[in-house]
Image 1 (cartoon, rainbow, N blue to C red):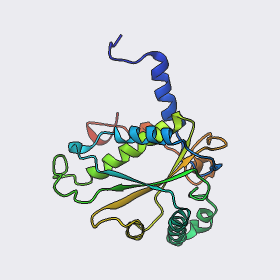
Image 2 (cartoon, rainbow, N blue to C red):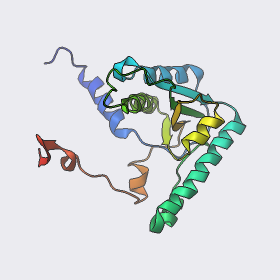
Image 3 (tube, rainbow, N blue to C red):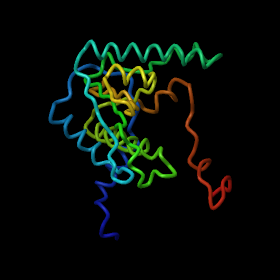
Length: 216
């Protein structure tokens, strides 16, 4: 047996939380205890990052009026997205795309400003800063699910408008509005699957060997 492996029960828990993580849109209010929120953010902060640049910044939205303004920005983009979808517009407008008004906590995850000097791992792939913050968000997501809390990633917003609303410096970029909090239940499958908007494809279609398109 691999001496570095966790116990069978611990491994099962890791795979379970990955499998049962959901992008939640339905919340039941409540609250997230400060100690728990700190623990979740600490998990996010332990994410890997290219060159150890740690490009993530999290803004907790505690003002109800500011939360409402963020929700209004999301609604504006929801309408524009529906228009861009053409024949699927009506179906899209029936989807619940955010839980900003009902969740216990709203966090905005953003890329820091002055990222240009960080070239370790980014000289040819500057977007690795975005990959790094995505890892932090995923850490937060999995930790939240393990704690029995739902989380939803909202990306329907104009980043410049949200940056201005939150007083971000030039070069900083909002990436996600995160809805976090108690839920009545977790979706049995991804919500977009349940709503017949999209369907998951098997890993076998996405796994190649040696050359692009050669099945593994």
